[in-house]
Image 1 (cartoon, rainbow, N blue to C red):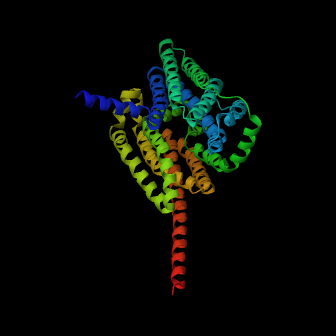
Image 2: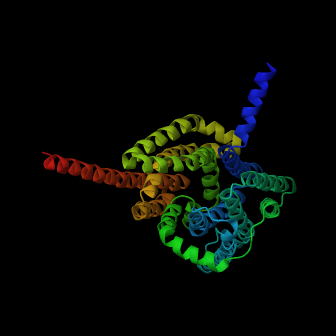
Image 3: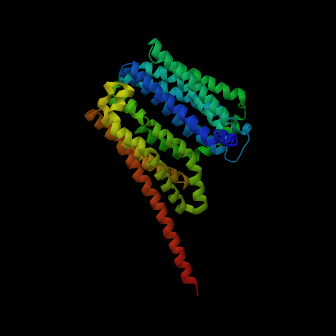
Length: 436
């Protein structure tokens, strides 16, 4: 019996040390603390405060998305040849330049919002957004740097530190009644501590800016389409609260954020699995071409659907009482909005392996084309539907835009599949005609 327990304990220890487990824990900490934050604020503060928090997190997520497209992806691509840490050092300065530019853009939009009289996005929202952006952008680069050079335990420790201070900040908001300030400061201090942990444990050499800038110029040409695709996608997904702010109210934003947070765990699981499946899809394409890639992508779509199905069904059937328990009785009436989120999640999960397939076969322009059409449709529908049916209109627009992107991406992959199949048939016919 002792031998059996020892074997189980050894297996558990081995599992804990795997990159997959650490990545899942990292993702769970980020999603879990964000989910806890919006629950705490919804329980103890009115909808206008919750709406402001959703706006702040929206601005933060958009900033991190731009960072991923302009800094993180080029950094990862530049290091794909197995370069040393010293060769990667100059990217720290490139990330710092991005941070300064990010704050300048935030100040510009704050000024434009004030001039145009968009009072839904208050000056406090912009001020509270600037504070966590500084630490979040610095932490995200250091976190990616740690993963790039297989320092996953350090990345996980830093994620735990960030989560602890974030939770302490939430407790400060609940206990003191000072609104969002304690939560934002807790997150920001946690980010500083997380960066300090990575820097002190392993250090990031601060040299080689010139060579890294040249690397960025070369790599950014190939990743430019991904940046444009993100811009298109964010307009009908992560940036939707900003669209609501322009034609709706801060209370609508609160409902949008609260109902979205209910499906966030499903998307977090998909995001964690996507980081595992991307290399497998790439290997499938390398080993068996587009035939094996499409077969593997179909299996991933089925796998994601099976994993998410219980959660989607539970929220669809018991959404009203769940909203009442989690956020309070004032949110029960938004069951329809939550149901539309479940539909949107299904489209998102199905679209994920298809988008990955387009990236693998290097069809970045096609991916951008689908995102562009979806973003135009999503924005037009959102502006029209929000004024008609409120928050449900924004979620419906998101779902229809995601479906549009899915249909376009699937058609592009199918065309590539057919083109290769026709080429293969012509090649076979040519061989038969020349055979004696």
